[in-house]
Length: 129
Image (cartoon, rainbow, N blue to C red; front, side, top):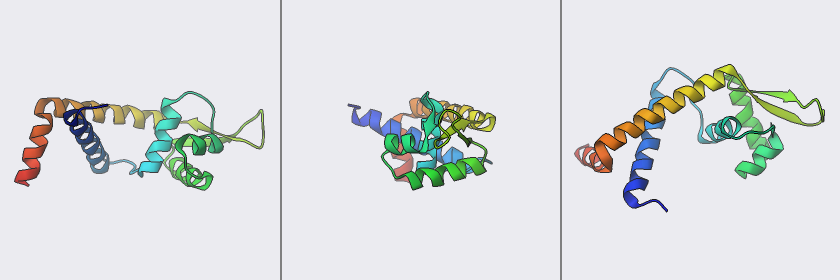
């Protein structure tokens, strides 16, 4: 289990990452959409709506809505499984790979910032408002 200071640093990294994503010129993803995106890009395998719903413990319609948005943004696309035409596979895209690369860079910068300032720097800034 993470120590309180490590947990504070991780939350700070998450906050800085989310803020950077919101500020940049690019897609704004909800937590669910980001969860689906990261699952598809970081875990190998032929991802399906059913499999993603089970993995993330959410409904199939929720996964479908998230995939609709990811498809609109060209971050993922659906393709009928040639082995089982009743099943739909989620495919990665070049734009999605670029988004993941940008996300990694943002997180590296946020982690570097957290190491430089420690979680106490965040607390001082919050207190000084």
